[in-house]
Image (cartoon, rainbow, N blue to C red; front, top):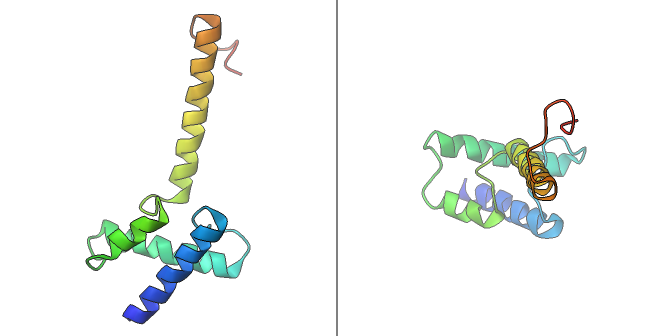
Length: 103
């Protein structure tokens, strides 16, 4: 069992090193989708306290594996919109008015 986990971990690390991101579940590439599913399962085990000791720390080397890519995308969108708001308030000296600048 440990050998299979080590192999999946090595494949995930190679993927992140080569692509600069975690694998996606709906990429169209079966190998990438398998890795994404494996990471999803690791997140599930971790949330339920069932991930074997030491594995979370090893998975941390992949980056933000503890949060799903969907949540990461939503966070990135939120921060981009916040940056837009900050830029507007600096240039206009006020908050945007609903129904006018917000579209």
